[in-house]
Image (cartoon, rainbow, N blue to C red; front, side, top):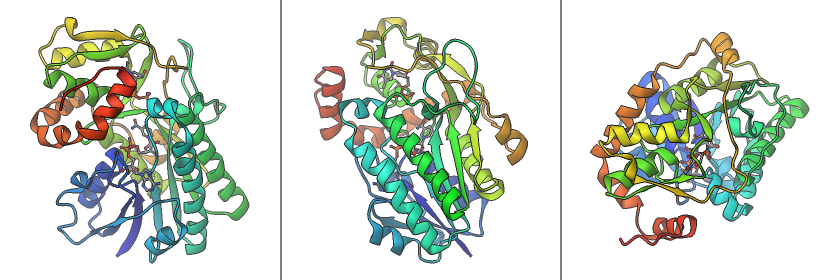
Length: 338
Ligand code: NAD
Ligand code: TYD
């Protein structure tokens, strides 16, 4: 049975990936590796070890010994582990550089020593920086990241490229647009707004709400990463997106309507520093070369996601306590009672 290492497996996309791969690839064993930072949550993997095809290992991608031990017998590495929130990177970038850049290099070195057959780096369209009103990112668009988050992800992409170029490590980079779906940490816009509304609170829209993001359901992203791991050409980059651009205000209105709320619940707050105006991704290479295409319509995916947060209130209410509330106060200047 082939053994794959999935780092960041207790986070949003990593845990969706583990769940999906266990379902569709009965011949794989997954080593689910995660440091369990504030964003990592073992509850995201509940029940998945039961079939005996997933082993959870608590470890840091920056730790050479822990990574080397986890790689024993592994043929494929998928690196989802990262500090992932732009707003937190504005408060301080050090953890982003440490994990996203340093951790990636540690993994690359260990993957080379272990002689893996594939190393997949899960990257983001944010490495391309911001678009104006026209055009879309292609794989050859210049890397012009503008936050410490996106700069650290771009740094990681360059190190992945270097490991391929210098050592022939069979690497693949995927660059996906904004994800949404179940198990997303309620600091990102969709789960933050849905859970705030379920709590009877307002939703903080940055600036005028005219910034644009290109949305994809997490299941479609996971299928693209799987396709890239199995069918991608080493050394290649694949953009992943679902052609679903929305301004933040359009998105907010869709969430309000999905929860039966009106616009009085919107609170316009101070804009994000250095706020990227627009992301939009051209994913034709992935569609042509990986035989992949997104399956989830945004309207259906959003309705399903809202329902998931309605049905799983224990999951997010357990998160929105303690350290989360401290972060909320720092970010939004609003004290929330537990
Ligand atoms: P997340 O914050 O929900 O999960 C990240 C996981 O990585 C957490 O479980 C955390 O505990 C773990 N982690 C952090 N530092 C670690 C370390 N040093 N060692 C081991 N584990 C560590 O993030 P996500 O939204 O699931 O994103 C996963 C990946 O996908 C990231 O690399 C991110 O850059 C990329 N990505 C995310 C999006 C998106 O919209 N969320 C879009 C494109 C790409
Ligand atoms: P986010 O979910 O943080 O993802 P990213 O910054 O990686 O794209 O933010 C998505 C968009 O929503 C972005 O334009 C910022 C905006 N936003 C708000 O307006 N209010 C909020 O409270 C948050 C978290 C984000």
